[in-house]
Length: 127
Image (cartoon, rainbow, N blue to C red; front, top):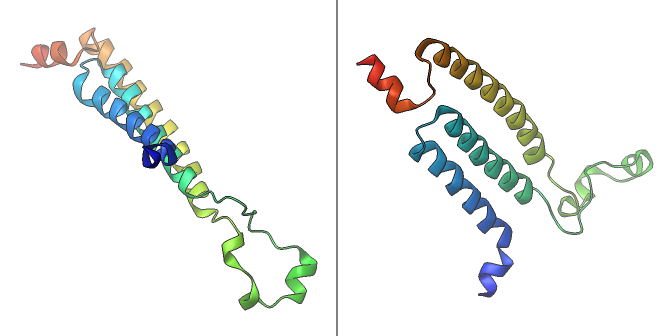
């Protein structure tokens, strides 16, 4: 039980991922599939941001006075947060918003042509 409580945030990410995955696979409405994709993406972003955080660490910025006096090999890297996961997730958010916008635009075009956003009805009209 202690293992579950200590890794509570990871369980939340797994639950969010499964909700998003279920929505993408099981739902037949195209808008619901896009919402499921966004939930899945949000879980992944939260996971990466959480693994990039450290307790007791600080941002990786050296003051000018310290930078001039301390040689680079004597800097304790473990005291600083790695900014790379956070920067990559900012990029992922921008890409996700762009993909969502394009997907919703395509759904609008599909609706104008087939007068529905239900996958089954679209496939029925195509055959």
